Length: 351
Ligand SMILES: Nc1nc2c(ncn2[C@@H]2O[C@H](COP(=O)(O)OP(=O)(O)OP(=O)(O)O)[C@@H](O)[C@H]2O)c(=O)[nH]1
Ligand SMILES: [Mg+2]
Ligand SMILES: [Zn+2]
Image (cartoon, rainbow, N blue to C red; front, side, top):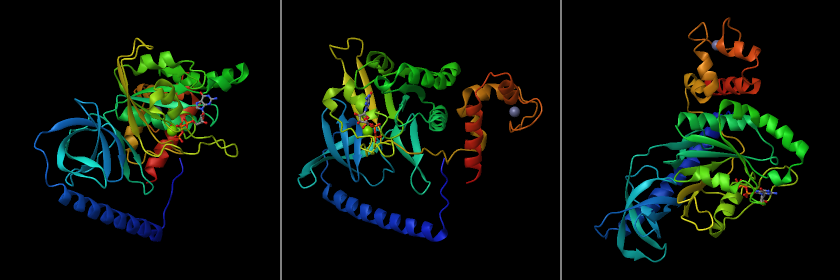
């Protein structure tokens, strides 16, 4: 994980830009809420499907129609997946096409957060039950990133599921190598689904996993998150990005998270309902706001073994009778997972 140490001057400049941005957004919102004084009294419920600056798209719980809304100033943050209450405007704002105002947000059951460019943790999606960690041969599988997502999922009580996409591009030999690398996760007990958004291989298995759940798709840019959602839900018509030949990395097509629904579909008779959130790909995923002591809870197999350490404050580096080091010697845990653990502890310590 790349750590960015900003100089005081850089920090000051970033802060200044952010303050200005915030002031502008607040002015705009103030103007909006002045315009929006005439609210219909009926409270409607809905879920946030997308968020662009000061406006948000809400799916109404009863009509399932998308309503473009502004936000009351007293609500702190609203993200994809938030359950909210909204009220109709009696004077629809033609210019911005705002039809309603979000007046309350329900407490979140789970929240996935990640640091923004200044290192502040920002929520990115709410009320998620599952995290689909999408990987692919190109851009190449990155175990360190997978481990960080797993920590985020475990600590937020979101169920992780691994996906290896683009299996249509693999030769038998390449497949064997990747299977070997992913075996670590299978041994720990994480479910893994093999897919191709191109040939549609594995889509039925994936749908079974998604049934009746709210799932967020995460992973590097270009692994095929949007393509998988398009394959499951062709009417979503999400734009997909090319993977740059020069860097083998995605071109960051998806810039905002968005929630999609699969409803009872004839052709996939077992799926009754599923909510999918597409999220923008990341190059790195830092875990800055967690405590050093909590990191071990994100490595479920290591956590279990840590009960066998002789010292309660064992750092699992070179102590005698360390449950983790003993297991490593006996080949019961993977070396890269222990490395990942130490790397994350170091990075949160360095803050
Ligand atoms: N051969 C093959 N190509 C795929 C598959 N899935 C996605 N692709 C291609 O990979 C590229 C990136 O796909 P996207 O769906 O945009 O990737 P993403 O993960 O949504 O990327 P970001 O939105 O940038 O995070 C596109 O050119 C897709 O056509 C697959 O299963 N097989
Ligand atoms: Mg995308
Ligand atoms: Zn130990």
